Length: 261
Image 1 (tube, rainbow, N blue to C red):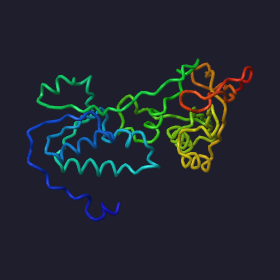
Image 2: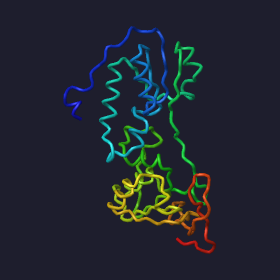
Image 3: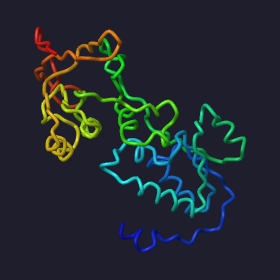
Image 4: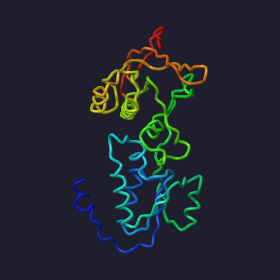
């Protein structure tokens, strides 16, 4: 902020143009960093972004209450001053292929499109209305519809009660977003104890201070819907910790006959 108040980042003296062109696929942290490095070395750079705005996870994954999106816009403006070009709403592999990029005269293509798909629980009922993958949930909860692709512009109605499965930093972002949406009760269900959580203790502390309830040593076995196909409850099973698994943490072992809603 101080740097911006003093006129922003100084534009470095760039070397002579090399005559080489590079296509950068994705405008997240990796894509923006690569674009800057290439531009500073004298190469012509064009960034192709599938979404309407630049930033990738910086804009669409990190909630606004944790990061001011102006910082993303300022970095993009800095890159434009370095000569970097941007093309939005272009999905490489669908709207244009990598072979076509080379045919257009690009000498190199950097793939920084990110990992946009999460892992489903594959529990019965996980396709009911009202159940969302984490990234989709955060995107739709924290950004105005005009900044989203058409298929994500429908607002999410969290309702009175919400549960988030998992205990990492992304789960904490979802929990805190649900609270800000007006949910009266927000629960974190995690299959191990707090000691095994992979995220930062600071994120859990913020969630706890804001009113999140934590249920440890539980895992979902089934999601239950109403007559309209909307989720109304989740059935959980209690766990106990067993031997270490490949992650180095105790393996959660289901306790027979311990299911509850």
